[in-house]
Image (tube, rainbow, N blue to C red):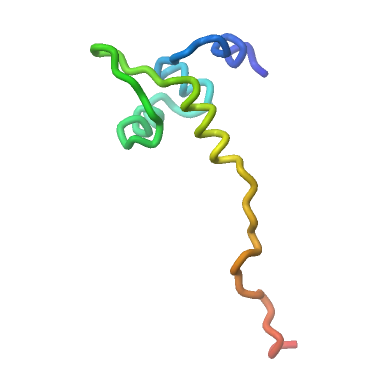
Length: 81
């Protein structure tokens, strides 16, 4: 855990810049994720903030185990052997 991670642990909302640092993404790309709706956000007047829970949920969804062998064709067919 980095110092930034620890600093943001107790915050309910993060600025887009803080969210970008936490996710180790560029600020511009993080704004793009917000604009596309891929990263939930809340607007308070002119300020856009990202709920910390949304970041945790997004990361959790992205890190679920995936089965890579389901439905993939065999690389070497039986005919070639």
